[in-house]
Length: 352
Image (cartoon, rainbow, N blue to C red; front, side, top):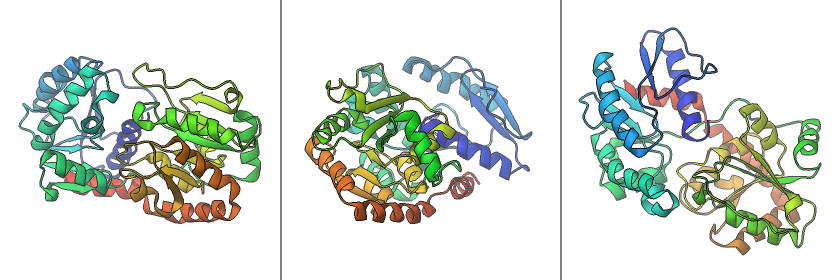
């Protein structure tokens, strides 16, 4: 339930609840987790096979899903992660979040990269409408795939209701539990190469040479079984790996942070940015792709490929209290632009 999973769940649960007059069929590729509760106008269907490999993706979308769309008399298919059934005649809307695999294909296993780069141009052409999550991504899809701009709608992601400013007592308790009572920079996201965690950790090691008061907390699971980084001995006790957290846990960890340190070199939206904003947390962000569009004046920016540049911005926040306070105020103000309720309304208009 990171990234695309959260996006899908937050929107599907709102759309199905808000439109009891409609019937919805949700297609899964494995048993439905009991924690997913949907209203009575929703039918869940599990289609074989589980999509654990690109060859199985082809089989699932071009055989199993194609047949199911006909069997259940589906009027329109919405694919929240961009995949389409190329052989089906049912009208389809695809959410293409970003094209990172086109620009950094070596960040993925070879066969996954090959699949994405072969099929996603076809998906983009097949879809009747494309949704995406930032104006940066829209421009990238138009430029890379030659899609007419009028075919693409930008609908920003929202923020889970659990994210909010925390009390002093809550912040102190969270820091006692996760960072030995110290303030901390926070990274949230899958530990995928494009998230740039390696350089963030190297930058934090540089930061530690001048600052002993602020630690680093990392939340997220490793992707593709890749070794992300090795810690220098002097840094080990100041970097805290929490793995995957539930949303309530993550909201506490986010609300307890000194700042969010989020420096991916490619991003389509960056949900941790808006989660931090809702909590009133300042941000150190990369200056690339969509990130300035989303974070605006709630962040200070750095070159994600410069370890020294990242370290300098970490220092800037710790050494300038006025800057920290101003960014926190800007974050709360800017967070009002992002809402899952609003996003659900906009997606529904596209489905209609």
